[in-house]
Image (cartoon, rainbow, N blue to C red; front, side, top):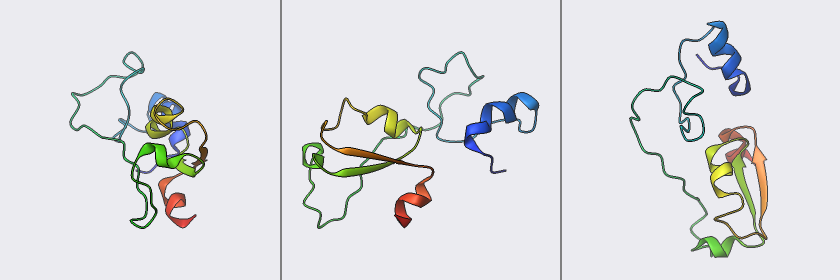
Length: 100
């Protein structure tokens, strides 16, 4: 059942949902939820057009990078791994990325 992701804790606490099944980062939340054993390892990737000329993270300097708001990708890559001179554009969901 799709839910408003921002309301996931309230939905779980109220009993409206019984579990959350998603690419949900464990680190930093170990004591907030009851976890199963991890069943997959998600890697963060950056996708660009093949003709973009971008071949490394350094090539993103001065570019606008879109990531889902409040996502593991945004948290993991801001600002430690990526060049400081790029612009982050957090969007509400991944569908917006492809429509933008």
